[in-house]
Image 1 (cartoon, rainbow, N blue to C red):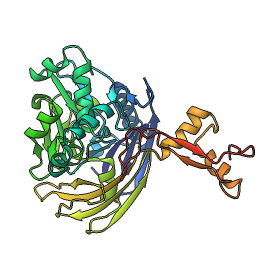
Image 2: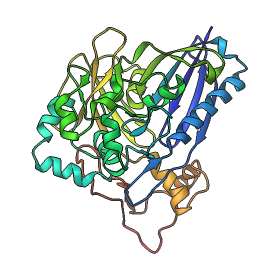
Image 3: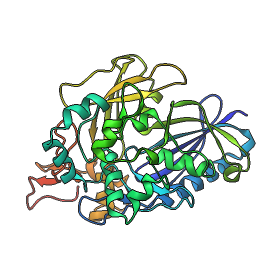
Length: 372
């Protein structure tokens, strides 16, 4: 069984890639899905769109590669991080749209927690800072705004998780509820030393333990894919948040090695090995990965929320371009920016400012300013 299937569930699209045993790409399929903006600063996805587009691209990639599911040795998942989903354990129906990592609706709650003096304790425990970016206040918001959700969660009727957890739940025929350490480390709820849900963080963010998934390593025999999905049972052997997956994939496996990924946002991570380093410059400390029984490895991260999303905005919001690649021709048609400066803080500023209230700015416009 010489092939691997990677499920890459991103913020604006789902992609599936088939690799051979030499690590070469055999086939790849990608689908964009709808972005929902109910209010300024709010960003949502339909969890069912995420699941359907993931499964559709997976089956299409297998068909394009002309291989059968019995030729797959394993499946792995990498995913947009911090996005929150809560669903009914029995029916599998989401109780609310997924609240995306870019969403700012919990800004006031974050300011309340900062004013109460919680940030130093949160940083010591989780490696993270207080910002609407992370998952905990998203879970809290859904529980407080969907009728009966909090009591149902406390009774164990609801399941919660980041996108990896939602995909695993569906891929395993609703049998497994789990997340890996890299995704759990982005929730504000996991103790970065013990790799377990932390009682004090659950108390601060008012998240019932009963709704949270089991935390597992990033690599190993993590679960088995239900035969209904692909026609046979296939081992699920890897889960990692997209930025940690990129750090590993770029072979940043020596302490001090750094990668920067330019996707929906831009994320720079530095691998620090088995040493957990606390930033003095308001960067994040995060789990890089955990391979089986080996000790967890760490990284330092700087997060920029809007990168490629600004290109998507030029296309879908302003209509300046019809397709993303057109920005290359437009940019090449002028010698410079003509004094125009764009700050794409559409969903606040990330590292090192962490200002959830910041918004985008365009400056330096003159009568001669063009789309280019």
